[in-house]
Length: 374
Image (cartoon, rainbow, N blue to C red; front, side):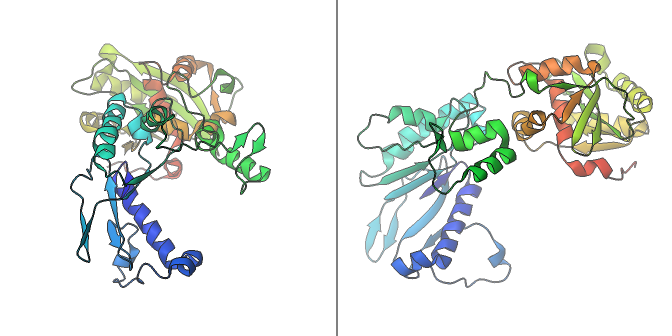
């Protein structure tokens, strides 16, 4: 049985295993052809996931997600019955799960009390993991079984005492990976250094200011309206950004609070900024009740694009941390409040301006799109 945080990942793992069984010459030489050749229609052959399969020598492999119990799993073959005797866990902790302590607690308890308890004593378990945060399921399990005679824990960073420990990597390979991933992601995936919740993502030395006059000819306004029926405390955040190739210049960022958050008053303020900066268009986050703002903008003849974030704000900023390390994000003196929020993020409850700023780093195709005014 192959376990992942969700079924989509575990079924894709099984697809990879099948491909190896069919194409890996070393495996075929050692074990013959364990999986029959594809005999599917053209449409089915485009699939990239398999929920379960049985090899030619009667081994059943099944994909599962966390919370799917192995308690009743039984495989009947050739007048014999088998319970799972090998469990592989991979990608149990993901960015989504490690950001919620309740999810960590539930998953940790389920693995120890349900998964580990109900498998047979003959079952072997392989747990693969990378470092993500300072508190999550696999780190807790590592502490639990650190001195256990039944578990072997291998933790090997890419670099140890200035020596490369993974033979397939050269110094040139490492430099390329560093340039691609940058500090936090590289530390997590290759040096086994977690990202701590209390540690800010962006450091003060990575903040770059600009004072000289620049010809801002392609300004976009990014808005996190933070308007809902249940939450009245968050601010309506507005960021004005000029994007030049792969550099970002934040000209001004402000928050609307209390009565200024009234949809009609906020629309008038956005319209004034839209005309003041001769902005190309406004991009606004729209989730449920927030869609009313987009309608009001369009009625005021503001070119508007609606977006829905697919990831949480922490993950989105982590993906673009490298821009700050490369000093490609610039701030004017009108963005001092935004910078202070950014330096505290994600450890401060006030982060609405940061949320509107993060939108600027995604969907580069927005820069040159034709906006539908209707």
